[in-house]
Length: 105
Length: 249
Image (cartoon, rainbow over all chains, first blue to last red; front, side, top):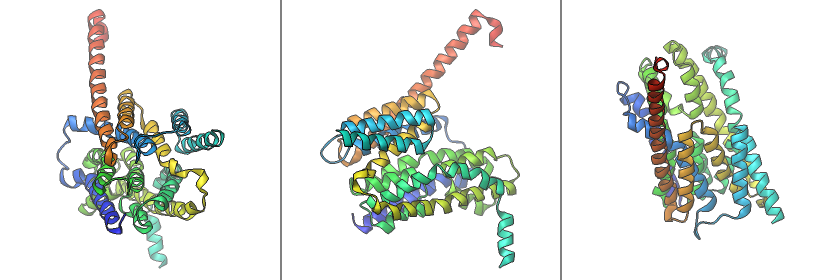
């Protein structure tokens, strides 16, 4: 990737992120976000993060691919995330499962 | 010099620092993974790191860094932006509070508006404007400054870690954690399951389009689940009112 493309990505995402954070506060202070829009926004987080996690794990060139060790690592991480509600334990559980299984298989 | 340091200290809200520390500690390993992602990314290292001071939002940074080079630049930009749309919600929720703030604060404050700062600011939104400003800026700058060294540290340590640790797999693991820890209502769970499943089916699509398709499917499913839950509660309340008129009151 060229430095130029990288800079375009970073700058556009940075500026637009600021616009999303500041937009309503700076420009629309008096107005309310329409209820249906607010309702939809509530589900953007869980939806996009789930799709992103799967896509990063399984996507890429050569079509969808996820080996058993990787799939089980994600499942272990998911269980620990629900159980402990803690990102550090989640990361440790997922990576340890991956290490152990890829050493065994 | 000592005068300015003294006045700086007077401007720091100690309570804000004390509130921020427990929220920042879990962000340290995240910053670390992000630093690793900078060194692994197709982006030049300096530009990759600049996401920390410029974008200042871990999930979007991680997405942009790991996707760079695997999809067209517009696909990478869209993925980063969709993740950050939740900030519109934060902005809307805090808008009434910021109306009582001076113009410079209305322009600068939102730059620091990350998930943790939003959560803390909401808890203190009814404080007098000057006090709120001090609290908000202390939290925001605390996270901003510490985020920079946490990601830089990951960049320093990253290249030393052997390939066999497979740390390239850490970002999806982090995202799985972020999704599940953030879910506290059933419709959000529905959104995540549908988003993830559709994302898996479409993982082979060109240009990482599966992320967007999964996200749209998840949002539709979440909204549908919420509307259905509301109808069921309304129906149950109606049944209660009919069978036991006293309960409706």
